[in-house]
Image 1 (cartoon, one colour):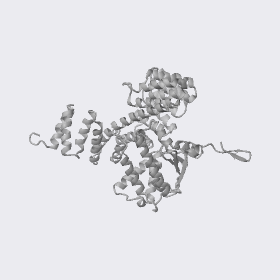
Image 2 (image 1 turned 45 degrees about the horizontal axis):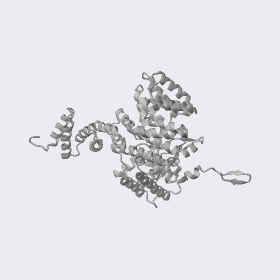
Image 3 (image 1 turned 60 degrees about the vertical axis):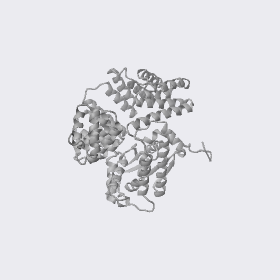
Image 4 (image 1 turned 90 degrees about the horizontal axis):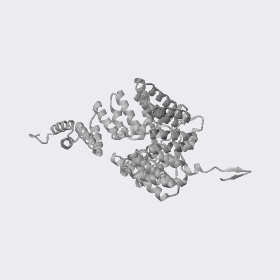
Length: 533
């Protein structure tokens, strides 16, 4: 460097040595200079991102890990190393395409794929990968635990519960294991089994854990024993005063005359310096729901704003920001991709299985419609299935790479392959299954091609109810628009623009259902007349 201060490789080498010696500020200076000179060398970018992650410069670390992955080419082991870091910094969605591109797909790659899929809610795909891994490593407790978690998210409790018992059979069981088992039984709506597991958790030393009493409260609520609900939740918030989820459940059962002082207390607890970011959000939401219950709507909305502001700050610190321009461009590309007046090829129709797609904005009644349809003997409820999102992402990636020019270029055999991939990612016992992933409204064009006979139910609800309902609840981080009123309004507008396009483009394929009409009490017959309720 004395001879040539702009020698990129030497700057990188010295910066790396300083990184190993934990001299981070000086190391970052040299590595940043190396990246400035040679901006596309993945090793330079990776080591710079390492320092930025260590020193708390998360946004820049995220950007440099992504840039490193983009330039790593087909160097599988190094790309996997980058993807691990990306997943650790909440970039699972960005890491997944790179993980899919690594060859060979070793067990380690498949494991990290399942981690990424779980992180972004693609539980069907995660379950498939974990099932493959458990067959190869039947004694691995971590795999069985994650397999149980994924099956639980898919509401397949006949698989989730045995998987959890296999996990416990291969380790020394402790109270936390029985507590997790109790929670799993609760999701399966088996309160007696849950209560037995909770008692074992208490017997193994969890009598002073707030989480144990919270789950005991959930169990009592499922049994309808509200005295026990109150007793257990009171213990939970004594042990952990900032336990936001416990407060939310407490406010559901409190008498109105005791809500106001406790809501004030909850509001103060959110300002406690020992409160975690997630608890702060939950406490503010609990406060809002409490004030709403006693008709103090001004205070309620202020609390909801506080919760969303905290959530927004948390997302921004992680580099997750809703980009209105990006959302506009994505919608425009989809609309332009499926213009009116064009005929498209369809998959072969000899399909013995059939999905029913229930879609629309969240909080429009997709769950209600799924439960109604699930009452039919031949219909299985599939919940929020990520299979269509995975297929669509692969399709649009092929379009971006020039491998496919438009939907008209797809052949019947290609579309049939997509249908087969959907079923590979969708566990099914009955001939018909519901798929209520709301954001499948992006993919209606592809759905009509892949499943020519599949019903598509588009849910609608008063936009004020939709947006307020979203804003007053905690949504997963992938719903970035949910934490800001302007973002939420903008995203709702995007969904309406796509809906108008699809209804015009495929009017005979979409059943437009209005939530308010669906929930209106049906008319009853009195004598020979019909009387409305």
